[in-house]
Length: 211
Length: 267
Image (tube, rainbow over all chains, first blue to last red; front, side, top):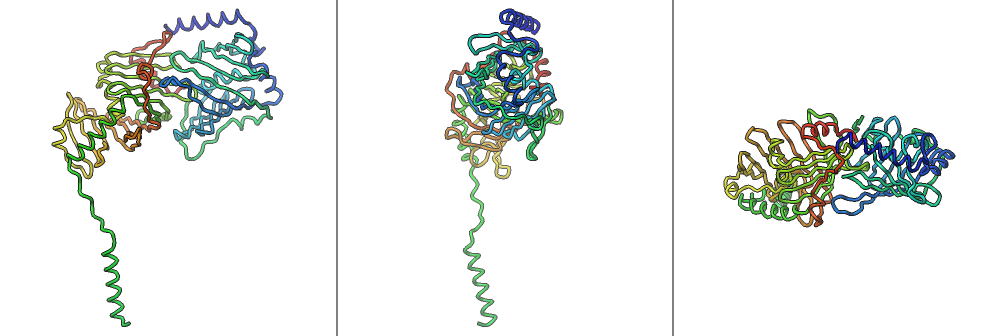
């Protein structure tokens, strides 16, 4: 399918979803992130344990890695995977991606940071401007990005726990990935501010700039 | 004890120490035929394994004409004798999925939803059939004809064997353990590609290349590879070795893909 046709399909999908379930648009915020947004506004920071699972194309089996995520409004996310030492800090103005296994730290510009943040930002307050959602069932939502670019027409499925907090975020890219993030043990401590979302480069690693 | 006696005793003691010290004598050099035999035995074991091998890979591309590129993590699948697949992936998904089998190749860039498939890659790209070449490089399964070993000569401790394949000239340096140190492939136009095997690890009881450097001397580009977790995978080849370009993806001609690859600094 040509890019134009794909774009038309995406717009049709968005229009269909909007007609089916106009539950969360504009500045109202997403139903799927409502409880999280309320807690975040109260405390300033959210933290959770996470398990990333990806379906391996070579073996057909799930591959899993465990880590932590921290979120702070308006635009900050931090992912950490202690087993590999991999850490990613994402902000609207850019970010850092520490990859000890490759001996490097990537310094991300706004474009790459936005691409990396494209699913995590739906959990932050104010995401209703960039996504539409459809309720699939109790505590289950399909969330579709409105924006142009790499993620156009991408859909994520969000499943909420008994408290209404995100328990699973799942997305699929045709021909590539099926990825699940399982989230649990949410905590809401005080905000640490921007400094908590900046990774200082270790001397031993090479720094690579990505715009 | 007189001074003369003490001096004589010291000389005798020193002589005794020297005579007891281990002598540094180089071991006898193996005959070329013995090294060739070791090479063939190790190669046969690698070929048997290369029919169904998966590995994790770290890769770094460097070159005068390239900007500062990040290292990448990839999954690698081999299907000897003529197929392999490389999937560059990270926490944020698959950046590039490439497969070659025989003279054909397919490449898909999921973030851009762009793909390309070539049935006669050698004609289009002006290189040898990419499938078998990739397998030979990654499995070090180079196969000099029997007669080439007769003319092999030592360069220091490395036995160098030279041979021709079609219009290409090849040379390979083999250590006394029967493992290749390096291979050079020079085509009819004089372009040389070199592979250096810098480290080996045991995979499934077989020495397997774990650290490689590949160099295109004309383009002044070098690819460093580090392989880990080399394991057998007896799953269906169509799942492991085939890149599927989804129906909604744009299909590009090769020049456009080259341009897209040059922009892979973006996630």
